[in-house]
Length: 495
Image (cartoon, rainbow, N blue to C red):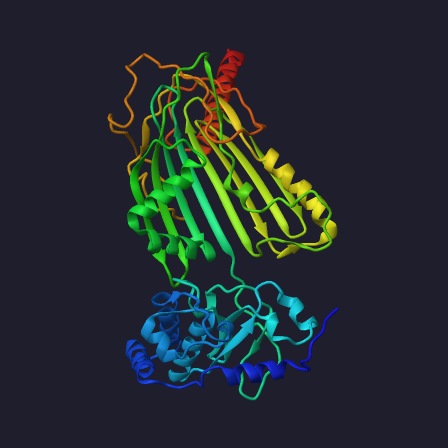
């Protein structure tokens, strides 16, 4: 049951607008507008500069001293003290944009009511946040002034799906729909490369990360808040949750394209050597993929409401293991799809190399109540089955890597691979003709292995993927053998 003494949304809009400080242009605000105008001649660039100024230069802090914190501070006050809550910062940004000649206004929204707001009776208690609506090149946009260090520009800057909101207008306004924005995807790609050694040498782990959207914003904020050393330690802690990291070999290297909201990073770590083996084989069990923790597993109890999940999410995690002694096998591909959620798995078995890739992609913001049970079963099945283990000969040294091994992720693979020995202080080589035996050691939490193989011993690591060259050489060899046999038979027949 709903009860309200307010008949229309326009009443709330008009009353709230009247209670807020009147839009004005104090001298400090005019000075800031002139500074921004001096940076660029285009309106779009000035809008971007104004948004970054408010988002990056002001701390989010709510001080509720009067009227329960419902009335924002005037823009000149916020400019002076350099902090404010969502109302303070939204009023400041909209006032600054208006001073730049851009049409802008605050909009009341609710984080969780979303699309259901329109079905409720008008009430000022139905709002818990404020954003700014502005116009650029004939298109409306919403921006959250409280977000920090956002990337993506006017078109690609992320904002929550509020669905609708109430603009604050002196004459009153009805609920308005959230402007449609470009279909952006929060995308994260992680590529692990593990140089696996079974001859008592430390292992080398490289982690290459490519982040788009909200993931790029997160890395950018973490680095800004923690500083270079703190950020490096934070990344090490995250990797230590999956691997037994003994030390960091290089400080994380990254490139941040804030306009495109693209973050690229590479990390390099040493993983302790495997203890001496008790037999001829080492069973290596890979830690679970980060994909498996991307979505929350619903409770087993019955639900009457939908289960919320991140929308437009795309995570891909590939682990390349370079391991001497691994032979070719047919690849494995699996797909599990249900209610706008799709998991994929791909396992490639090449000579001296294993590549396991898992991914998840969502195209919905919730799972219907009647489908939650099936969704939970699918997710539980994926968590259990998307894990890997395989065996390798013990005592095989693997101390080579590319010269440019510590590099940022890029599209495509290099045509020519150059390998060099790792420094003796990092990975000592076993004496020639002698092997050091190793035994299984787990890296990561307990998992259920499903992919196993028993490779034969291979002494040398292929510098290139031998699939196509090997096939061609085999065909040429067979052809030459056939020609020689045919010539011999013809010679014998004609004698």
